[in-house]
Image 1 (cartoon, helix red, strand yellow):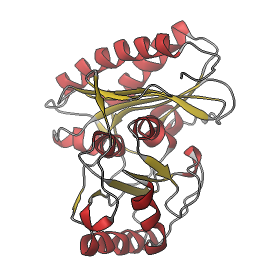
Image 2 (spheres, helix red, strand yellow; image 1 turned 180 degrees about the vertical axis):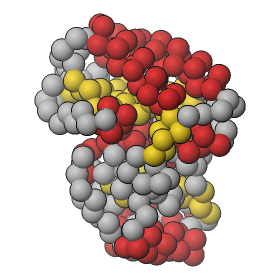
Image 3 (spheres, helix red, strand yellow; image 1 turned 90 degrees about the vertical axis):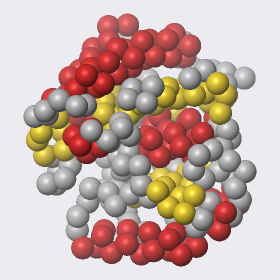
Length: 277
């Protein structure tokens, strides 16, 4: 049953589907062209003119129909526009998730758009325009890839699981030590490990059942807002890596195919708690 919500979620989905596909054409055109690259928080935290153009295209297109809605966007946040998550309908947008992939022409590049109402995700879209894979979910209505229903895998233990991990863009000694420990644990105990270079892509792969577990600390809300609801609607579990309730603004996520798998992991991880968005 669809949630009670102050916005028409199907109208919202129709709008962001159209906008995402429009923006995807720009990304496809630009991925093999020379890029103008700037850095943000670290020397490997990239932004390109395409990130900025796509975010502007998405926000302006949504604002035209929903002028009172709020926005949390990666590039506007980096530019100093720091909206807080409130009960108001809020669009949480990563215009090019996997910017380093985009810079190098690697195809795991996604537009990620989540709609949060009353601090709860209601709608999510992840679109990889290079591979033409469009993931979507509305709360209570299941998850889809290119209009076909998707579900998470049946994996219930780490030894049977393919795990997505990332080294992240934080380069402090503390963070690198924690990530190295956790990747070492997965390398020893999991069926295999992969690194897709995009949080949205990794979450989409869990939702699709192509990957069984994804854990990362040091993300941002725009990396996770869409993937969170898509994984849940595909039948998966999303929690905090320490085992508690997932909080969108806490910059940490563990997404798994089952409660059994999710519960196996936290006690074996070293934890990192970044500052909140």
